[in-house]
Length: 244
Length: 333
Ligand SMILES: Nc1ncnc2c1ncn2[C@@H]1O[C@H](COP(=O)(O)OP(=O)(O)O)[C@@H](O)[C@H]1O
Ligand SMILES: [Mg+2]
Image (cartoon, chains in turn red, brown):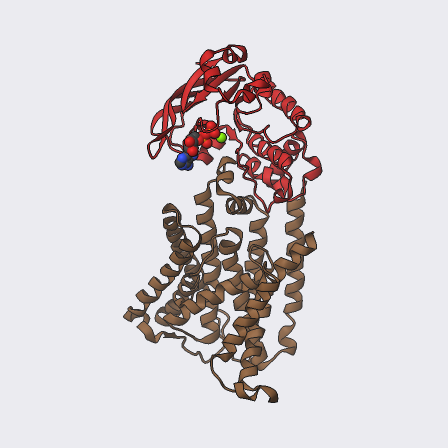
């Protein structure tokens, strides 16, 4: 089996609301999979289930041949799944470097080594100039990079990226897109929630469409955008598809 | 690259320099002034202990008397009933306090107590210990325990003549050790994890850091550090009872130095203690023996505490991050 991640029959309800409804899919090693869907479709909830932040009602999540269903989030992170938060969660009173040293230090016992690793990740995401700034003082674009840096410092095999590109100007997006392709080039898989359609279409090998918690369609970018069901689901939100 | 190690080294150097200066205090400070100095040291020590949990780990404790009392009673009981050295009592008390902290901390985090509810739980645990100890005949119930006076001085039994500077030196050494522990903690991996969990527990979990384990570790360490000062307190004042050891007044006295000086900073509780204790002495003195125009307040008991409280409120109004915390913050910017 070459699947890195296998999500099978996952359902998550919030007091009656089926936020994620019997969703199954896989992500292969080195693959970029886009996860799209209107607001409230359940994308973030699905990430929370995979990352261990929320328990699922039914279903299973298997990562790299380990059944990680029900594992606590810190253990899943150490096992090799890095994630970013749509609502960013920096360690406000810590410097950028310290923010990134924390995940690096979960993998090595030497703080000096963790710091060196963090330093190179910070350089890589383009935050070298802010390395000693407090995270709480960073503007949004830099915070997005910091989220990514923190996830990368875990040396993950899979990255769950929740809207890392939204809220950025096209000029700010471009280097990040290049970086994401670079990361994939190293064999890391990406599962990407994104509202910026142009970016999703360009990056993704495959796209999953979530609607009212259910998987509505999956396929290559061109297959998905020509799917009548998908067009129907996005009715009134044409602007989202317009970018493609 | 080695900034953290360098930071630890420079802070330890500052500590060593301060310790050297403070070691000269008994040369020029005698009598009641020296007792005040020893109270400053006790206040600084418990404040440094509280700060690990309430400051760095961000888990506000309103019941640190539990740990202080465990240290005080363990040392006192082993000494009074079994003639065991307070040094051993200090270690045993610290271990027991760490165990109590780990257990109660784990329970509180397990049941997701946060903020005010968590603080109330710590208060309840301290009150529980107070009530339990009050009911124990073998601990002399509400009467408390008295340290037997020995005919001769003894380092091993931590007892000296009342004019000896040794109490001061021991207190200073304990505070230096506790501050050194704090410095080593905050510049370590563990310390970073503890602060990260305080800043954002979910973000920390996504970074591979176990929130509960790190919070429990901080509570246990904080409890042990505070307990050490409890054992020392009994040796200095020769007496402990359940109210002194476990009472709410003690819990407040323990959290004040860090709050006034600056929580989550290395030097905050030390600065806080240096302000608090002399300030308390001063307000007590004013009321006991007021200047002519304040004659009316003479001897009004309780008035000094009101004055003391007003001054503390004023400090926090103008320096909300505490005296050291606010100044350090301004310095940084
Ligand atoms: N913690 C929660 N409690 C209750 N309802 C939630 C919670 N998280 C998400 N939801 C609901 O679940 C649905 C899916 O939300 P979400 O996963 O955030 O969607 P998306 O990320 O696709 O915009 C929404 O209707 C949202 O209101
Ligand atoms: Mg979302």
